[in-house]
Length: 199
Image 1 (cartoon, rainbow, N blue to C red):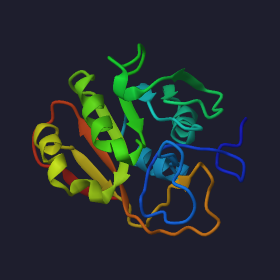
Image 2 (tube, one colour):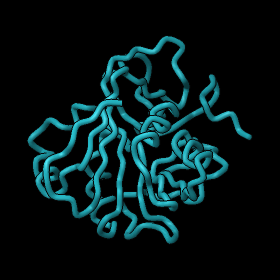
Image 3 (cartoon, helix red, strand yellow):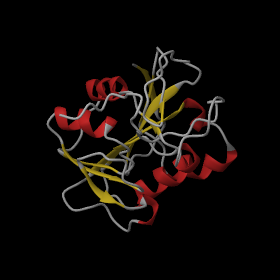
Image 4 (spheres, helix red, strand yellow):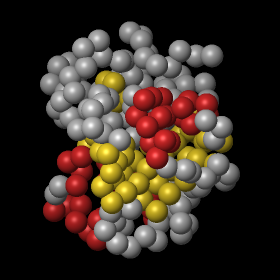
């Protein structure tokens, strides 16, 4: 089995964080998700058996889901060598959810996070669950008002202990803990105020 937890040669996942001041910004906003963050989400939420991961990087989220018995379609705009990636496409240009997938779990490139959320909800059927790993500051901003008015998240899971994203898929030797992240969970069709929970 591939060592996918991060090493000095790997290139991994999907989250742009402008707070990273050292080095070049990760290619394609590529900041991997700590697998522990996915484990914590699965402790709190149940998902449909078939899941789409549309920004899979090198499989940090997908591998945790597979290990929990989910059937995962892994896709990304480029192929980073992840052996279980089935599709190479721009999610924002996809017209529908692939066959045999329903719920969506991902860590989108932060520069396109709003667009990822909107597109995921637009192409999904009612009651589909969508979980996005985002900065807590995603709650801020006039530009996202329309998104939250149309599609309010159902639950937001804030991490009590900060978790780092891994630039280019490489686990940092000295975690910075500079950014607060949360899992934002939407259920299409939900109308109401989100619940804030801690994990």
